[in-house]
Image 1 (cartoon, rainbow, N blue to C red):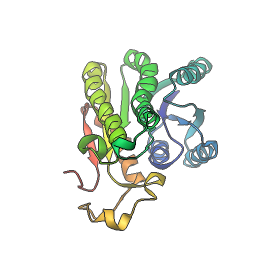
Image 2: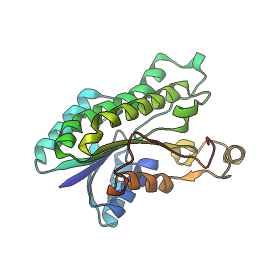
Image 3: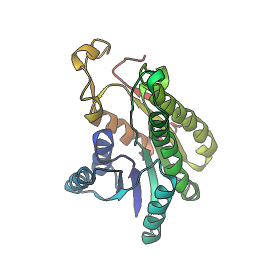
Image 4: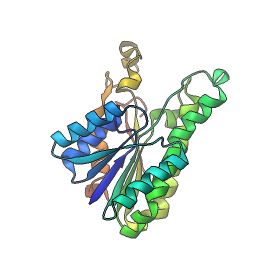
Length: 243
């Protein structure tokens, strides 16, 4: 059984990625979520409606012990399974001006994006290398490339994942395992609901917010065999806001 794991897969961009992988690839989906079980089950239902298969896995990617425990239990139950695709999508924001960012809001944002990438990817890395095929896609952000005021913690977290993407890609390219990052700009999701779209659109050359399916289309290409000579790249998908 060939599998793909999507962290933070219950809503928004993560959900769109799950649905696109179900539609275009023959992978059993592991849909990770942390708190919203109802949303994760709804995503699974939609995956199955598209003819795909999957299951939900509850763990906080920032918690190393919990991640290890849940993934170990799953692996022991599914001895014939090979996880070929890892999409590190889980992330949180705790926006504030730097002088008002608490220690917790700094640590939680960095732990979810950066340690989450480590905890999940590190668990699967040896089997991927033995298997000599794999696709790792890290969802980062325009904030990690240009920095966004009011998001010093989030910008730092995503910039760190970009550095890790480039380094890991060079380490494992010989094993036919690619590592790329996708950097969305303003995308219509729960996370951007409270933003003033009318005002922000003026900053975007394409004059609109992106859709989560557009990000999912790019991820679907990067996890396919068609992308085998692309690795260590950060691909912007932002309507020209950072070009």
